Image 1 (cartoon, rainbow, N blue to C red):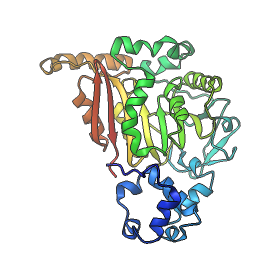
Image 2 (image 1 turned 45 degrees about the vertical axis):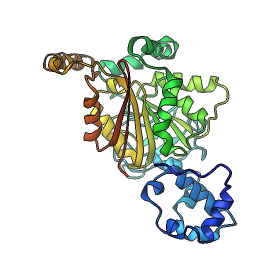
Image 3 (image 1 turned 90 degrees about the vertical axis):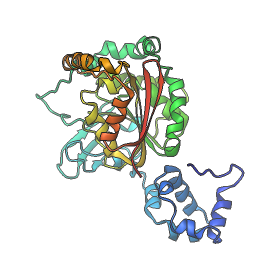
Length: 356
């Protein structure tokens, strides 16, 4: 249940009422679901900045003041994909697409360095290797092809509406807003972002303090970068492109408010490894929203279809989901709760939350 401040009630008025003692018990021990909400954290920081309510400052602590005062605080969400410790950033203090070129990040523990190129930060484990390279299953390697990346937003993704009942990016974004409402004002990762359709929607909406467009494909990230630069009315600040492995996410534990994965779960080599990593990096109360396909095989046919699915998966590296219960079981096994599904033919949008 969300608590909203009436639009006709100013921040100063609310703060003054708090400081006058109307809600002292509420301030002394606010409900946990509100403490974990980005809206509460942002509101608390603004309250402490108001000259009318100095008494509130001593009640709510100092962590948020430090976070707003320090522009590098957001960069502390980035972590080494090897040891998950904080990366030290030597680049532009502003967190943006334009701060990537020439940036160098160094792990405070294992001392490995990661660098940014013209379009993105490469935070994969194998980043910087000279001779060693890694290859993913066919379903992942397909999207590293420049031609596929070029076509993805020029007909490929649109075909999902015809073949699988996907409503389309704009409508899917509207659908997921209800799930993301508790974390509005926080950070969001667009995992397997492709050419960045949703990354751009998240950024232009102004609903999030940080948007991370993340993909394993270099060519997809190049397309994402190009679209961002071509599109009008989109800010480059608090938006960054990151190359990473979904099974080894370069973010600190409990540091991210929301993760979105559009039409991606079925392409991951190990969906359980990916969702487990997402669960690790989400803050308590954080939200995971994803879309994928479901084949909807009748239960009596499951014993016959499952071996065929396994064979296809071993060859292609992709996953065919056969039921909603399978997706819900996947999320539960990774520690997520409050799981819901919305369907349209083969299309499914699944939402889950990390326990507060």
